[in-house]
Picture 1: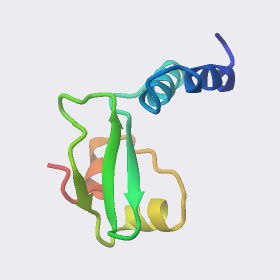
Picture 2: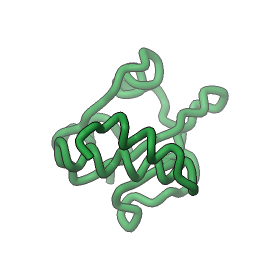
Picture 3: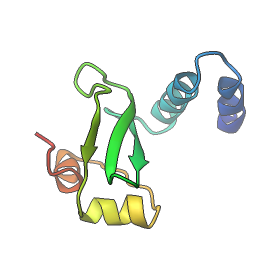
Amino acid sequence: MSDPLLELSLAAAEPGQPQALYAAADRILQERFGHRLFTLLAYHPASGEVERIYSSRPDSYPLAGRKLMGPTPWGAQVLQRGEPYLGRTAEDLRWAFPDHA
């Protein structure tokens, strides 16, 4: 298929939601832009925690519990202002996540 929105729409109708939709987004973004890691985080504003809900590399970046983000520039950008974040390098990930190691 060549229409990413159509692909996502069809994926959203598949069984196994929401993981089927997340996997389709991962595949589409990989085909169009390429990436070494694609993760999705859910934000729980009441507790200030984030939770990984999808990982293209679950062996290295598993779906495991929640963690408190605390006040960070990444959190201000993504969690408070609702702006996307694309980390392009290992240094970008170190900047965004104090617990990167």
